[in-house]
Amino acid sequence: LVHYALSQSKSDWAKNYWETVLVYLLRQANRLN
Image (cartoon, rainbow, N blue to C red; front, side):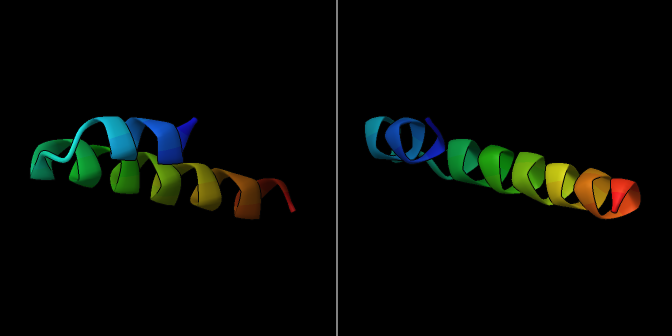
């Protein structure tokens, strides 16, 4: 889904948004582990 969104939207703000979301999710996953 993320790769699809990035391929559909080449704008920098979209890439930065998804990168921020991924980092947030990774941090939450690390907390659970």
